[in-house]
Length: 495
Image 1 (tube, helix red, strand yellow):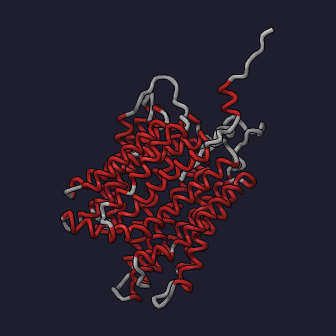
Image 2: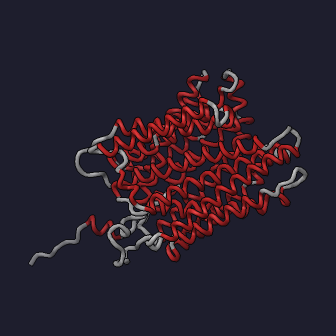
Image 3: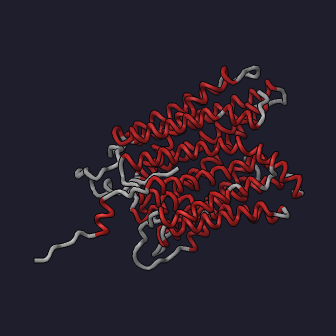
């Protein structure tokens, strides 16, 4: 009588991989590198401009080139994970990021540096959504995945602060080239251990067909939108450039929708947006990014231009909101399995609103403890909570073989929100500033904080609308037989 031997693959899938936390370490290390790289360049721009001889105003392209290619290609980068495999594309993107970092450091002209930054942005657009696809496949739905989400969100928040802390000393001590060279050891470690520790994600079955027309139109649309709102504070919201670019972006989005509706292998299947939870979650993510980035910008301007903080002192003093973001993300990740993401979204948006409201009380003769500390504590707590809730909501119900795409959409929405928040907050602050004295600057920054508080209030309204949706807001677990087919699909997480 023959005995049936247990299927090895089934056994492996049933038992969690003991190396999954090491795999998460690699994934968050790469995410930390991308976040730091997008922020640290700000502190080195004066040195870069002087050494490479940029034309007046041209040095901004060192940042803009990266952000435009990164934000514009996120959806396409995520789709490559679904068609070619998440681990494969993540490692490819990481290697490309490392090569581009070396080229940035070696750049001998302004044109070479901007071109290398474009390549860096392309690599980041591949790395970020594919890393999330690998994370989803590595951690089972439920508490472990939520814990991984909390770590991911916390590392992202700390990365932005770390960039402010280390950017100045590196630029002054080693030279601006080293803000790019520091990426190389991280890339080397990820490439060395990634093939052993990271799982391959499910690949879409059947013929692997790309959608070049859809990719080109949506990339151009996102790039135009981000560029339009980024430049609007400088050229004016009513200028021909801003209006022309916004109209062109809308037209391209319409063309993209038509292409996707007719395509046999669309880049973005439009059925993804039939879920009110997915749409609401992405709207919430857009508003979260607007409030967070707008608030962070005005905080930086107030601390340095009114209180007279150096870049290093500013980084140290505002680390409190990064720490609170880490705590908020991890606490929310643990609670979401019990109460669902909807109450977490409401509490998180309330904290964001309350923190920004406290910051509107800034004073030209103020100080850190009286004007910034308590507002930043509340603000930071809201950052972690809202990122967790918005990520889960916007990616709920996605199929495993579309994990890269939905993560790409989620990240693209976040990038657009960040650009909008910075542009609107800085425009409002500029409009209410009537001089160069600390008092005049303070009036403008108060108005900027008020604008970001309005963003948070809109986010709270969105979270309340999510609460009215019929599903419970809890990720369906393995032992949840009551969930329907849609609710039982994997819940993905991002940011």
